[in-house]
Length: 174
Image (cartoon, rainbow, N blue to C red; front, side, top):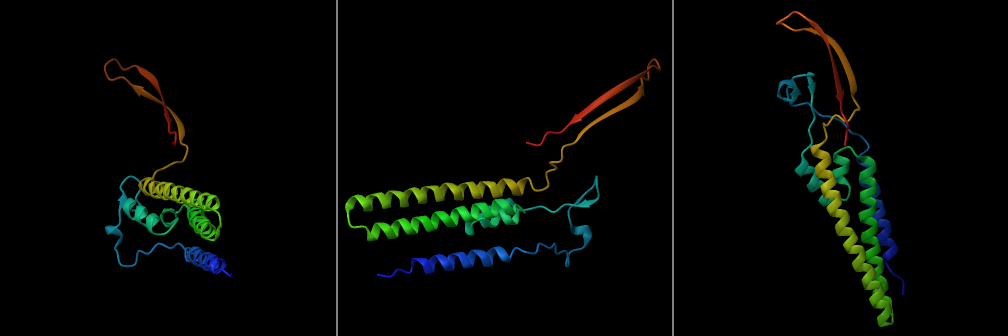
């Protein structure tokens, strides 16, 4: 008996590749808004682009890896999307083997493997949703290592004595 399983795998792979190809160009559209309506940081006069954490979370729930692509994390998106799709395919294959197996021991083995794939899929989806949500919150976070030291002289107003002040600024991205 010939199965349609390889054809399904080809269709899923094709849809995944078409989906990834649609993310090829990343452009910022500011056509209908005036610059005064965009969020501008008053300290740097730079337009800040923000990401919606709820939108990233829902995107990641609907399509595997979409929330990570939305946040600009391409490698994570491909890794998570591939993992989710691989686990779904594995569950389908294990179910197919369980249906075709002849002994009860084989059926139980394949059913347990299918259940394990489904549990791992659920854990991967929860991780993907949480990761997309956190990445959207931290989208504008400055993670550049900034270690600077300033030495300046100040005069104490009461007795006109000069003293040096050393200030050390340390930023550690976590």
